[in-house]
Image (cartoon, rainbow, N blue to C red; front, side, top):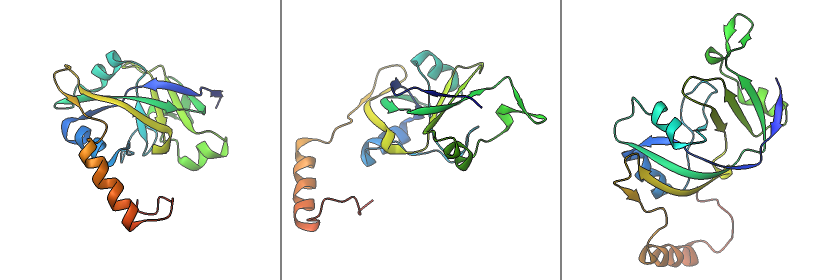
Length: 165
């Protein structure tokens, strides 16, 4: 399979209302449990494609992210791997990493390209809103919550690591 350096890109995953609010609570994108290319965070490069992919999602929300794609494995979904179409073949993490890649870019999909990353650290959340734009979710904690978090971390955790995840 071919690879390509993509770097940073503004991308959009689609989710439901419950998960949209959960994302703001944890402050990061979480990998899904399944997908064509295994457990990852899946993105579209535009909101129009999000609408196509969210046909079965009740109360869809769009998350705008800055995503570091780095070097991506390019997957043409019209091709076959052995006797199976790529769309029926889950590209495993160890195969992706062997190629020195951070992500996957799948193309030639009826509903638009799929961008997939496997590490939430590659995703910076910029905004979250309902598909119809009627509900904008706050992506930054309030000043009151920030003070509370700062106070807790000052007293509970004096080192600078992320061992509380």
